[in-house]
Amino acid sequence: MFRHVPNALTGLRLVLAFVFFGMLSWYQYEGRGYPGFLNVAFLIYVTALITDFLDGYLARRWKVEGAFGRIVDPFVDKILVLGSFVFFAGKNFIVPDTATMGTAHAMSVKTITGVVPFMVVILLARELLITSLRGISESSGQRFGADLSGKVKMALQSITIVVILMYVNYRPWLEQHRYEPAARLFRDLCIWLTIVVTVASGLGYVRRAIGLYFRGDVRT
Image 1 (cartoon, helix red, strand yellow):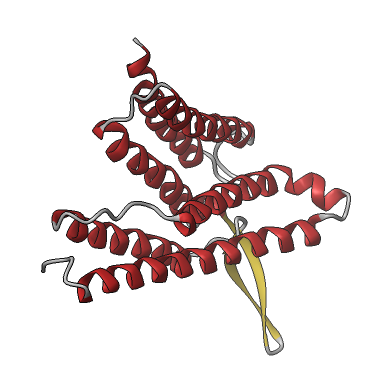
Image 2 (cartoon, one colour; image 1 turned 180 degrees about the horizontal axis):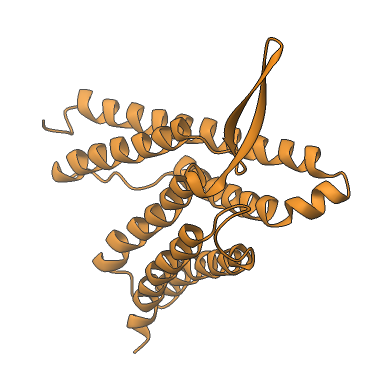
């Protein structure tokens, strides 16, 4: 019976991911959707993070690690993280912003989350590249599992998502108490640190793959 619990938690996390995305897709800043949706979304995301820790911990503790967990668990992680950043860069989190152009004022837009499309492209490109390199390496019989930088990257991405959700949730309160500029700065620092670590982690995997290739361990 125990051997199915970690896989069930992984499946639950996938369901939670789609419920989370449903909350984000229905919510619209100062528009459609009840603001409380983001509070629910925050709780769902934290629950998903807890199941992510539990399924791996229980699988190792009960020695029931299998192919399903090795394949589906990172897949669900990527869906949850990348999907979150895609939504954060989308229209549901756009707010008006007045841009000064000479003596005139033009209305432009920005995202309240601080995430813009090019950041999402970087995150997606890194994951697609590493997945391709992993497939080539493991098809040649070489292990190409996650290293420490990959785990740090994943943890930082998850923390940044939590920070963004809290910032958007409590922005009115932050503005009322004049904490908003400091909170926005912290949000942006988390986002940019995530981007830097993501790129650095990707470069580390690329160097690792190049090393395997020149040693003749990888066949192309």
